[in-house]
Image 1 (cartoon, rainbow, N blue to C red):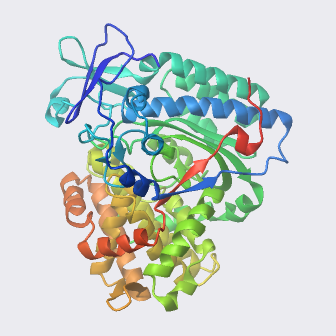
Image 2: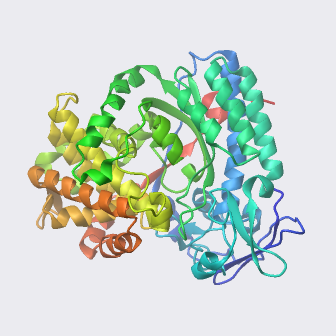
Image 3: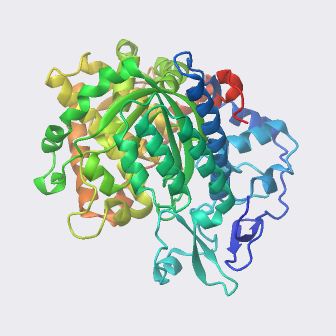
Length: 557
């Protein structure tokens, strides 16, 4: 990887220094990677269960199957770029590791910090993970960043570095990763030539150009126009979860997807309800004045490849994109449900978890259809509420900085349940409402285990504490199980929806920080219950066996 970075030095913390004048390969100084507590690594690996990412490709043409091979090759480049964004040079860490278990866990986490344990280091000699990952110099303070006059310092697509005079500078992604994005761009161009759907061809061509310029809006708009493509790819710098200093910087990732036409047809009708659901939100009118885009889509897919950010630690099972607020207001978003990955988490994690923590009489209400619907409407609910503050502080993301992602995930969770409730009451959603509510509670336990380093984990901690205070559920001290109080659950849902939407609309950074500080932590009782899951070897998340061999495909070369 050709980088503009001079060196990465790891001691009690990682000090990242850079020069804009003399490009050179980045390499970490020697780090001690001797881990005397190998059983601890074995225990950490037990947090994950392995799943084969298989999907039927029989209905795809030879060109489409060849395209998948090209897209996997491009996705692998995103993998390398995310390694750098999350840690630095991958080889500087892995080249000194001899234990295979330790090497495997480093690769799962894209670095030496445990994403399911609040980013605690698990490699000896490595200190705390910088809040800004590798997007900023590790010795940079928030105050220094805020005071420097640097036009694109808050851009989604720039690194902040130091020049030879130790002054802060910005380096665009397409310059930092010039060789890598050129290769990825070429692969997307090759894939476009094989595309049988004209809209997919246009998207691939525009995305190819975007990688070389960091201007993604045209390709995002083209992605929204695709309706009939059997294959899909989400690729590039997208989510800002990895930047926990400000939440400004997007990280590289890729998903390669096969559309499930039958399930997609079942979901298509729900997007039309967004405008009326927006009108009914339990909050003052000023916080719901924006209208969701009318071109939103719901589709189901089998995912056949993960790379980069989405493959780090806990794995994504549904997608809501694009993140560009202008695109959202103009055309809405697309919601992609990753059905095979979702089924794996349901079977391997949620059902065993419910057997331990959910009241015996209510376990009958844990269903895959409810899990799928709750997850789907979580993604749909990202389109509800407000994207721009009502008091001139810019976008919600800009105003809430590093807290924006956690609050947005919390909003999507609770408004997803609100949508389920409203659609069920309108007769548009089948099933017993108890199924959705009980499965929702079980899902909180599942996601809380992701830890505070995850925006989803933090959001679930906040909601667990809030719902508990509102009496939405209660714990039986004798059985150690939890029982949903359905009426109180609905009231808590409305109250938390109102509070989150107000905080977002006001751009209330201090209010969100207080909410996270007070409710975004695990109580001793909850931790003891979560420990029972580990004692019974119930995994926290999944890893994937994936790639050309699993799919039975040949290399594109």
